[in-house]
Length: 255
Figure 1 (cartoon, rainbow, N blue to C red):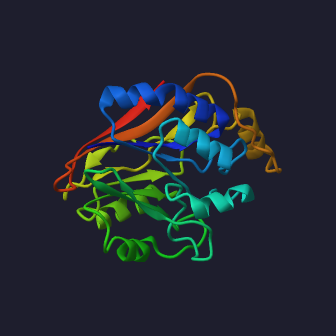
Figure 2 (spheres, helix red, strand yellow):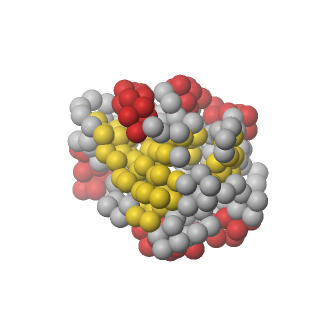
Figure 3 (spheres, rainbow, N blue to C red):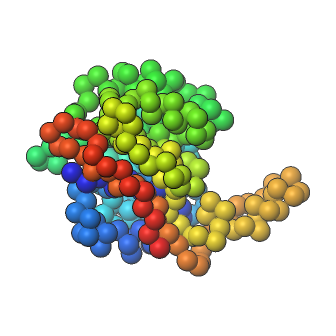
């Protein structure tokens, strides 16, 4: 099977660009399942019911999240009711929603696990302990979105899960890394998928605002850049349906 993981979708302009590019790319590559990180899909940040519906209607099968998942209170009910909208599984149990789901594709089942790192981010349950617990009865094909800041943490966690999952990718930094590969025990990996949004921006934000913040150290509202050329970053994983092993990992940038 071919699984396409899409980097953080930023704002309405990122959502629109995804809708413009994804259908033809799915057909061209014969993609069976699409997973996108949607925690910044609403303008500002966070996810709203409308941004989630827009992405699902555009061809995304599962939405994952991260530290911005709960920025919009209007989405809390959707996290509880929609089985294909995930937030990190190592959030406290009292948080809305779930961090693991199984997609029934008829001929196969695919597990999707969303976890968050703990280096330079909020204190959470250990992703190692959480993964051990949730992967015990996971399908043969299971993939992981690891929303984390530090590349070292991502790579360490990937080696821990090597051979236990089909693929693991990083999200959060919005900058695509060039280390797409197969790990020694045939788990597909990339440290960060990148982002879907405006190219001439700083992680989707207007550059002049990030410069102002850096120079003055004063509070600045980070408005998104809503015009100009865009890109959709991600990684395409080829997975053996019989063994669950990853056969290929290829980073993608569509402009």
